[in-house]
Image (cartoon, rainbow, N blue to C red; front, top):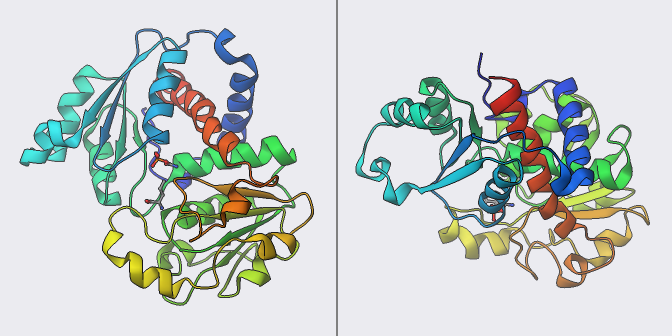
Length: 300
Ligand code: CP
Ligand code: NVA
């Protein structure tokens, strides 16, 4: 039975642990890792811009001996209205897996419903599960564990925040989110969240004593018109040196990138000694290798 990865909730705790271990093993092995996906092809259908996710998926396939096909939605018949359910069935005949970046979570769900091959959510307005999986890898790599850590989220309750909540629920670490009023994570994602997940409107509260501080842009892709309003509404939510000083001295700072220096994060923090953002970006490739090997080969 094929498996899809549309949200963190599609994986169990043990599966996440194994994927993180595998990704760290693959990182250590580098190009010496066996070409376990020789003959396999991944399709990438992207309806939004991407640097890291696209390139790290493509590199992950090549490093494992497979290949990838980038399919800008503009160039496929999807842009001319061919139904997702037809596209899904056709692409399933050519490909071994499909990574999809789009707006609505319903579209990745529709693609997965009709495709015979694993479908991977490469970002929707609701979730960014691949990013959070590789961020968990980065936390594990830097801190040696997830259990018992205090992880802070400062900023928008967006697709990244939603996926972090799912991850905290699944893995049990403590997650404290500070979002301005009106910019909370989705209510259905928050509902039923356990005591390890805390919401507030005060960034100081969540960064005090934190092991990990995490933020993301204030206006995500598709929200460009709200940029000016959001800059006003997010005043006080910048991850700057004052906030970072309140965290543990060995706290790390995460940002999935792209970053807007001087908005959600101060340049001194992004470029500072506690920032691990470029290791974080690299880890996307190693994590994608682990995810692809597992979904395309071991699960098929
Ligand atoms: N972090 C991330 O998903 O970056 P891209 O938009 O460049 O893929
Ligand atoms: N929240 C951001 C993440 C970009 C990787 C967006 O959706 O644009």
